[in-house]
Image (cartoon, rainbow, N blue to C red; front, side):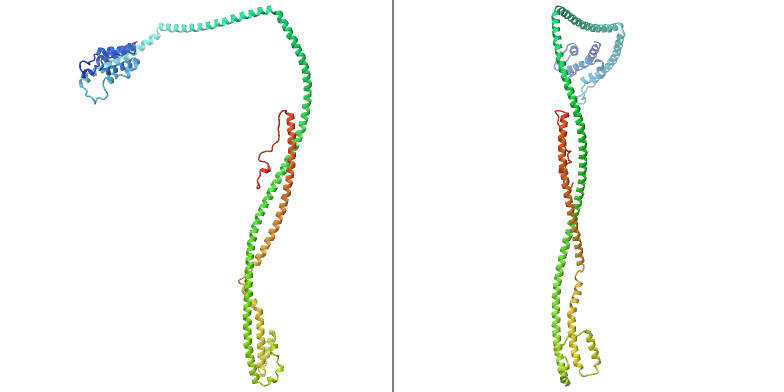
Length: 507
């Protein structure tokens, strides 16, 4: 109430000192009375939803006053400090440069501002006095008694609710007591009938007990029989576990042997592959050597053919030359003989002492030396010297022709030695040795291959035996498991990725 009074005082002071600017520019018809505006603003504070507009033209001023009144009524203590210049903001436009401001108007507004500051100070003082008054009212006995009355009323309401709950509980208890009394009366009236019913029930229960005792004896006998069967099964299980352990040890031994054989097979395969690669290399080398040897043999045959051709040609040439030379020398000798016969008459008389022309033989070099000595000794003797020299010359020519036929092939061979490769035979022998070594290695590899085949066959046999034993063990294990746990089934399965069929050739 105090805040409302303060708000009305502030609004009334603003309205009394703030004239409507429309009265300065409008005609007398649209002039606004300050008292009507004051009445409109005060009516807003008392009548909800009612807005009195005294002038249609001054609707803007009325709207601004209404806004100011609402702000002051909603927050009276804070609005004056916060919205201290609300009147100036509502009635003075912000864009002062857009309109011509009269200095007299500013002079009229300044006392309003002063009055506003005074009212603001008074409001602060009144608000402080109000706070003090409220604190004193709280410390007053009447206030304390009011608080105590409120507390007692609250406790009274709680006590009334508890009393209602107790009343409901009491009513429930009364109903249960009535029901119990009724049931007691009925029990006293129907006692004999209930006793008869109970005796009948007791007889039926005794009969059930007798039948149950008979069934119990039968179950005990069955239990003893099952216990005996269980003991037998346990013994059989222990024996089967022992057999299973022995079979496992056997399978472990066999698997270890299989692994060893696998390692051996892999090592033998590696050796076989290595030997096969070496054999392939040697075969390639042998092929190269064979090709080289064939080329060399062809070259040798070609050279041999060429050599024979050259020998024949040279031999024919020499024979032709020798024949021509012998014919020439024979002609010369015959001319010389004719001259000697003409010169020496005694040759015709002693002609039988000389050898015939057709009987000239090949002389040895020693005989030639002897003839040379005889020739030197007979130089002083002029008789018969020319004839002897002639025959010796012919015989020496025949000797040298025969020696040329012997030594010409040696000369051609010496010439061919410079062009023919002498290392061909050594290379051929080396290739032959390598070939023999490769053949021996091939025989060794074939023997190893046969051994590997034998080992693989043995491993296949062991694998078959392992399969048979595994099938038997699996069947026995399945039967044991089904007898120990009726209604269940189990079987042995090999681990994944451990079978030989899943391995590759290199593995």
